[in-house]
Length: 210
Picture 1 (tube, rainbow, N blue to C red):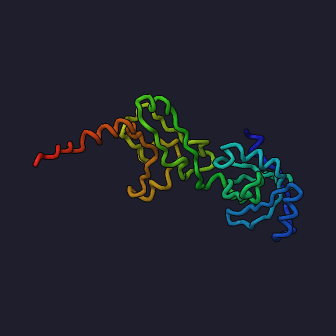
Picture 2 (picture 1 turned 120 degrees about the horizontal axis):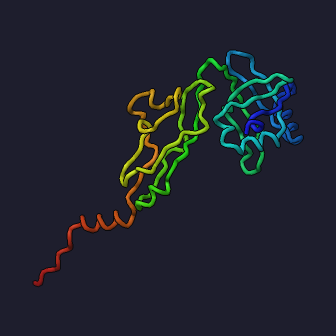
Picture 3 (picture 1 turned 90 degrees about the vertical axis):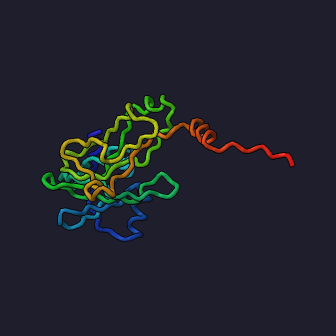
């Protein structure tokens, strides 16, 4: 995985839509590197390398190293544009990082023991699949793990119920209780709910004889 998160990049001076189109025809990906109060740099990467790397979940949440003219630069993927129906990466935005500065990223959620929770008959509903986090680059988690083994029918886990790795905080929770998002719910089985609704409904009275 480490090799996949290291990409060779070249500085490009030929800019504009026409230049980007020519790059794509040559199986290259136009990109830009910015951040850390430094000048933005327009880059070119090999499409096959970017396409292979973006198939890894870690590509979107872990530190990516760009080798630019032999100099390694650590960054995060901040945005990636894809072709609407072809398997083509159109453009990538990279954000420079500093080991001493906190970064904002999105960590994917890995739900553990979902099969155990499902054995109770519950229908598991995922409300979100990633969490906005802030931490130092060294503390970036590949994922946030949430154990559903003890999730009970009717129970909803919120961000405040999630155990975050050391050094990692939730961006939403830092905004206050109103941003304590629901993460996952164990809904009651549909059949059981239907039976409960039927029992709760008043019995129809037989028509009286006139």
